[in-house]
Image 1 (cartoon, rainbow, N blue to C red):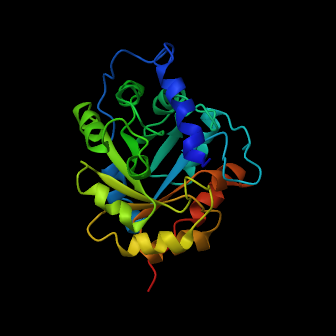
Image 2 (image 1 turned 180 degrees about the vertical axis):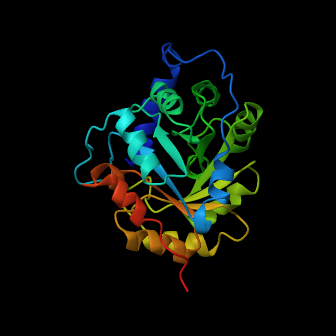
Length: 263
């Protein structure tokens, strides 16, 4: 059984739990900053997003160092992060919508609600958390994991004032993007079925991206050379989580990812 096939029934159990929305406000009373604008206006045309996560299932050592929320935000801001991301998935990642809300409250940066979205209640959770954007994953549709199309989930997100970041992994998944209302795109270096890093598939997917921008590189950044690789492939920025959490000096590490435009 692949990772997604194992994970998604547990995600469904999480979102169907009566306590799923507990602790979130009934409505978000503020207009969150735009994640798309933060990416588009990033210095030197290169955006860096930092992800808050506690577990990294694809890593040799999945558990990450425990970083207090205020310290995480302080390091991200000092390192020049353009935006943040936060796992809302409890199974395998130890995240929650409530932690997304805490991160929103603790920072003035746009925050991505990062989850394996299969149900509109997750859109509601993202809205109530105050997030700026929500992640939708093309593989969930192409793999037959959804009861409703991504296009419907995207429209529900837009109706709640959320931006949509669509994640793809293979070049064939760009077809999904044609029917989905999207504000930003991301290409994941990691295959969500095997959790293996696939630079070959990623580079091919970047070549097929065409007009799909702004476009972020997702996963697999532990050094400036890997950031530069994403820029060489045509990314407008990247998202980093595990590398930031494990860095001996997270602020200095983040600054090294501000790679110059090649050529």
